[in-house]
Image (cartoon, rainbow, N blue to C red):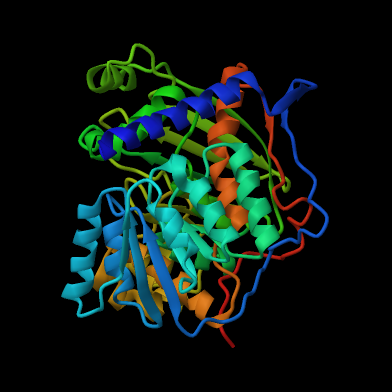
Length: 466
């Protein structure tokens, strides 16, 4: 009965979100451009740009959602110093029991257990938790994150953090009202290639970055029935646009210094008709319609006249790809399907890189040179934690680096690597791209979630304790 009840809740929330978007548009069309409302900051509410909070010698954590992503997170946290796992929660009590076994196998004490549809609220209300770590379905991210912040907790929430522009503003406003951290758990910004490319860019190897590409190409045919209550396919059935943009967009925004010297200003999007998605929904749900196109493309422009290309496709048998590419005036980086770098012949130190005379901008550097560059420009964070990260795992170690950085910053009272404005900017692509598509690929003005503060910080950097 609980599984059925959760399914009904998820579908009801999905339908409410969809019907709300249709009946009460949160945007106007001005001069052939879609403009979403930007609510004014309430008096007394303060920006959390660069937010520092009191250092926590020990970070006490509660986990909500122990289905697909949650157990891995619990396991990774058992390898982190300065952490106590205080509470575990899932709709289903047997999942809580399974997570308790993870703790027992690592020689750690049992955590308080919660289950049922209201158990997460009890967890958030505890006075011995500093951080609530949310790994549920998308539709529950914002209600849980908001409730946790309102009860004085920092929040880490799986991707996307929100499913609409209104929800993005809700996260921003509550974070500003409570002065609590709200970090989206975008793990792909911690992949070794992306970290290395970011470090190379910050050292000027690519010159001025002009264009970045990213995406999520992943055929989910063998995974659809793994989502509790079918929440993910049900969401896609009623939502058009790039509903899962953050894996590609996160690394692009960091390397472009988004809201740290540049900002996204407008986008246009288009999609194909739904063939595979519609067939899957008919087979698994008996659905007669399906909103999400089999392939969605979104183009984004920035204030500094740079561009981002995003793609989304979870329906066709293409090889997995996050489409990561960086184009600069002096160099190029590419992760999928082949990792490689290209530079102008005179852009590298001949004493540092072998076969210097063979480098040219018309082809990738040799494997030997690429490997040397990857080692030479390995990000300091990767150097610090790489060996343990690869041992613990989580998408090759990037999940562990993400958790390590979250705890490191909380313990040292530092700004987090991803703030609530990142969460909003990267998550809102779903509704913005849908609005563009539904209006004939009309341009959409990008909301400024920082409310004018996007240029106050000069350049993206990972905070480090002095």
